[in-house]
Length: 278
Image (cartoon, rainbow, N blue to C red):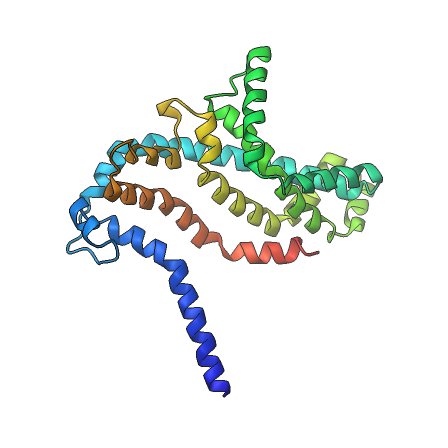
């Protein structure tokens, strides 16, 4: 009976695994087909590997410019998210009063608000800021980076907040006795100890910002500012959809973030386990 239950559990896990991996299989096999072969059977293996789809997709997507835009926006956004979130969480933890608790609860509450309910007021606010202060918030990488920081900071503060509570205050008190300033305590004592949770924050935010389509589509309108997810829109016209090129373009889109995830995924579980549940 136990063997049968194990076999049944293994079969269920196998079926679930196949269900999750099937979109990746469909994406990969169809990225090597021509249009006629793709429409004949989307599940079939390609008769021959057509690598020209990738060169055409790179040309139509303007891939190198889109890659540069995605790298600039993602790297700068994540850098400021890490810096600002870690300092905010440290101040909230070390000042244990009602005000800090209220601020933390407000930050946590913003995590449950869907972006779709905020996007129209946000765009109106950014347009007003641009007109009043002559700051280029719309159709600029700087404006998108500013909004990315705002939308991803709450989750990052939450993760840092849980981790910092596990750091003994005595270490900071000893540094204070030795004459270290508050600024020095954070950067010399606290921040190096945040390495596991910082790796988790970086990974989660890189994946979220790199793959984001909705916010960049609202902010960026110039062709030379489009990110990689936005550039795949060229394959979906009003009357025709170039599915074979779209599949190749989507493969090119996910390759950088998949490589990044594979190289650093071991830090996700470690960081969340050490920080979020403490």
